[in-house]
Length: 344
Ligand code: SAH
Image: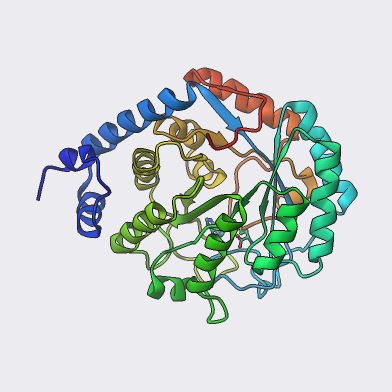
């Protein structure tokens, strides 16, 4: 087997065995090497610009039972809420004034938010904020539904594949949900013309290095425009409450590997990363991430959108949050930009 650092220098995509070897054996040396390489790629493409997306968590009702997720249907302790169209538009208005030009509408799979309602929401936001991009992150829908949202003006869609390994997928989801369908959704979204994001949790229960190698190979085959990864963090009211959270170092290493593999990809430093390390977002950027997704949801509902315990930044208003983020970015020599931040 080649030296680890030589593996990082190969131009071709690694095979599964090489990825597993790298993931199982990397140390500080490789972490730093990959980070420097990834960061150089990111600054060559994006400079010191960080794209920001205003995240609006508009419903925590969900018809699914993903075993790791705090808002799964079976969690009767979850306090459910659903924002109205007016409330969502108010979030967009606040965000717009603060310089956000992308709004991410994320939620559980809430049957009450019918296709017609989503279409109406998307087209209204597009009308009022014509220079903004809309990202949807509302789970698995039919191809027809995706097409309707797209025609109404949605630009991007985030749907983490969660894991590319069949067995692992079954450990994380009930039998009603399938990896096959999740992958098909991603393909449909791409064909329709969305900028598409997949992704996975690092350190989710039963995840092996083989699983992660398969995730990386899947990402390479899908060629998404965005990749969202963050550590798994347990939620007290789920079956995986007692599981440890994913490794911070491994998450950073994976951010770097993904940047090296998919040079132009839009890669966020996620809230989950900020939750397990108080400088998580900044460190994520320093190892190759180029996107931040601060919360624009009304303060009273933020804690209720509880996918995992201890979620960072639930106590600030949108304006304070933006200011804090700007200061933190200045500290590491980066800055936010006021644009849609589309895939180049
Ligand atoms: N319903 C949408 C949005 C899901 S929530 C969908 O199905 O795509 C967004 C992401 O949060 C999920 O894709 C998952 O990867 C992540 N997530 C859920 N529970 C988590 C946990 N306990 N720890 C870390 N991330 C989690």
